[in-house]
Image (cartoon, rainbow, N blue to C red; front, side):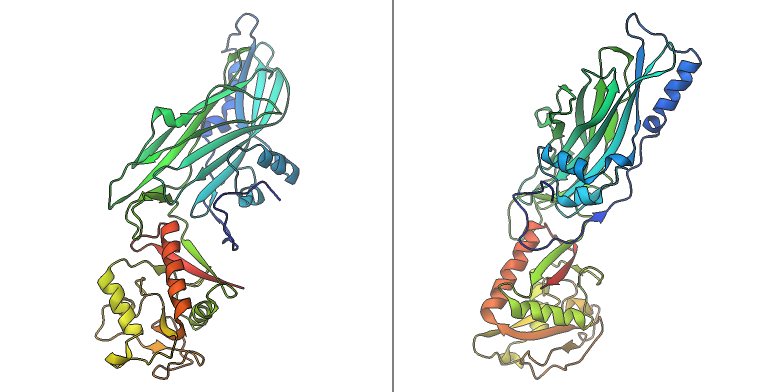
Length: 410
């Protein structure tokens, strides 16, 4: 519906984005027009020669959020925003986000008032569209702000916008990575700015940063210019070099718990079937409402998880049919695995299996959140699924003890 094509667009359905609490409108801005009118009524402002007007900005009407308006905005946004930005927008500046991107759409109204008479002589309506997007293999992320004029009248011709930005926390922002020059606001062009903060952490660590983009609207024909507007998300971006399997620094939005999307009709259907059955039996990790899994990166503990759930036949474990290998759930690379999920322990929680899994040593029809499941699946699928799980970890920067879920789709 909208211009949401992204280079990183997934081939499978994405989880629905989570919403952050609504962005609190600046009290100074929310009341700026009332305060301006009070000063005018009290005769506290003086008009300059041939410049008798003053301007203010206040929250606008949500009626500007329509499918037609959103389609126009999408067509004029330099870096494309995901569809959910438009589908969920109400115009109140609420942030919505996934693991890799975030957005907010606000409605604003600039009013121009004659200081001498107190009468409104102009108005400019616009949308402010924020987009934050990250990369799993770059220490930079981006915060883009688009100013999209939706209407207006009166003395607003020649109104410009310009801005700047900052980043607080474990991040740096070079002057050359701030791009919000003076631009004239029109109904035909694209008016925007962006900043590119960089992770400030070193190898083996992770750190969080939060951006702010500030901008001002101005017009040389006004005596008093409106207050500036600042846009700060309600969450941090986290960058790390602590994700196993890659030497790249990458960034994500950690408040959104990563979701591994696995298809029953994909390349590894037996693996998907086992995870689905294990989750249905009560084991954790199901999207969206199951208790999350948590990443485990210690290799010795991962091996203990794997050996507990899938002991080799030579060690008294399960025989492997030809071309099959043993798959365990929760994964050995999680703290919910067969060994670590039972800590502290004199013995591991019990295992379970299913009637098609070719493991006679484990009971079937076991339910509940404690324990683990094992199943024989084709070795090629098991190996492929393990590689895809590692890729998921890397692309979502799932580091030690990060929470995530697995979504089995048709």
